[in-house]
Image 1 (spheres, rainbow, N blue to C red):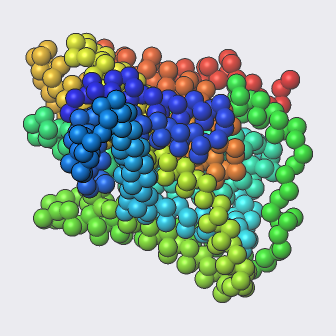
Image 2 (image 1 turned 45 degrees about the vertical axis):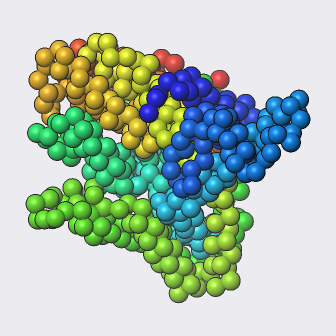
Length: 570
């Protein structure tokens, strides 16, 4: 495929969507506008609508449209010579309009809506929200809050507890976001912590911890991307799983982002838009607590909230194991972590959420916390709560499809801009920056990993071969480049207003979406810059990754004390 077909125009749809979202604060309209612009580019580019809506679109020229028109029975000889160009232009325009609407509605929007994995994410997200809603109305959330209160005394303590709970729900970023954001609202409201801060605590913990965990819904995807890239370059002396584990110390942004959440929570210091949001929350009137606006449920207890989560975790791991076993001809030769990593995460999460909702509903009914009518009302409220987020997810996926290699090929264009004359020591840094740019523009960390991992591995192998360097599974350049893609994808995802996890974090935390983006962005950029200056660059020059992580952590602490201020200060 010719990656020069669109050039810089391939950046236009995501840039328009991001700019509009930041200015207008209307994410749905902004995303839809980006999708429309992308479809218009494709209609006037090298593609036409195929018979299969899911297939890439081949080239169609104006001559092809004219030939088809003539074949339909138009008598050119009976047409006035002066009117012939106008008629052909009009018919070509009508054909382009029809092509545009088929591409937009069928090939893009409809195909992304009915995609099996997307439907499972819709189902999982909706059922998790319904479960949380039933827990909340049944009093389980309030009971859990009362359990946590002794450990969440003060503004700092409540933030630290939020961070720790986020670390415990490591198996999936969606589940982490929805559970932690919803359950901790009452605690953070009580201590006048802004919803922007809660959304930051949730968002900057969820994806990083899921991306690092060896038992998570991310691990299979990350390992498969690495494995495919290595095999394509005939690097077969090591497994993708081994390289995945070895890259953990080289994912500087992910490690430092998790650490910085703790630094901000422990010190109580903020800066920029987040500091202003915290001061506003501190000076605002207290928000009404759930116990003041909802009927008492004396039969509820903290384990009514813990048990469904435990069920979700158990069922998720069980189904990941069952579905993962089918990926091996001889499962006895694979470790349990490799089996988990090969499981179908979408199937596991969907059915785990179903059982979690059923267990929650059964507990609230059997313990007389809610009757059937009230349970149905809570489920309806939970489903309606995430409808806007599901719409944004739908349009985000569609925009991601547009920017993928089948259409605009945005990531390949950005990679080609780098060239092959790059110094080897810059590979970790360039990989991180490029992954961050693609994830920011497309709003998807997984899509970025899938798009860039083979390109980065190919570039790394070529440059190292040219420099006559030996490629091993523990080579700092190779691990730094691969780790740069994995970490940069999450970095760009944290910065992007069209990211699905950013949307869910703001939704689950009860925070206005663009307000969450504006307050989290300076923190993400700070950690990203430190990750480059004290992580990817030194590693490329030969410094140990562990030393780089320690130095980066010290720099973040020093910066926070030098620039940050507590919300109680004048």
